[in-house]
Length: 142
Image (cartoon, rainbow, N blue to C red):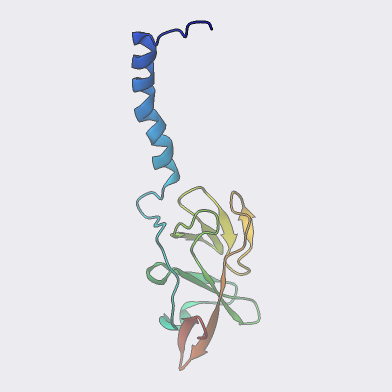
């Protein structure tokens, strides 16, 4: 049986230098400051605000509730969870009607919930939404 070469000092030092850098990969995959991988959507109907805050063809992001509400051209309201389907980060940016996840750059259409840019492949979860007494109420069985 051939003898196993012993580990050199250089090999040990090289491994020690690489170990902290390898940990950076994990940090890069976790949610940055505003992203929250423990984010949750409403578990009960929640009053989001005045119905007139969302114009036809527009959308509004409700960060505190992880919900986006949009209004299509005929006035119909739609609501979606803003928890990214890729890694569970809370989406914190809305440009026009495009939601942008801070963690890995996935983008979603706020009107349809569909993915418009990977890495996410699954659409956002649709939530029930209605207008009641001039207020927007969204969540499960709103």
